[in-house]
Image (cartoon, rainbow, N blue to C red; front, top):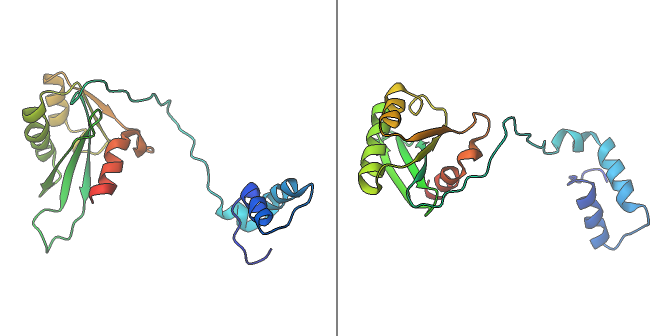
Length: 172
């Protein structure tokens, strides 16, 4: 079995079965083999354990909950914009995006104001990562003044703001 890549004991056994080989202890044999194989241990996917308790995100009202993030490092010679702000409504999956020259708290606040609040009203919840532009006193102050609950996705788990993460891959 040297030279083959190992895909885990169960998958390995199924692959060999499809090729026409079988014996009574085959599944156990492959599970044991994979446990002892150096390359399997080095290359196997490590399950990611959540550090914080996650709760499901449920939004029953359109435009009440938005996820927001930055995407970018576009080629500067081609355009004067280096990044873009992207926001996704958790209910309808509606996307708002705007190119940004800089990723400052002022630009983020302007994006939230022009692209979310003036078009769809004041949201109840805004979800973002812990970037300095989102955690700045300017943005926190705006959220507090407008009574928007600002939730931050855990640093090590960007999937907590999954709506935006998926949309970023789709449009950029």
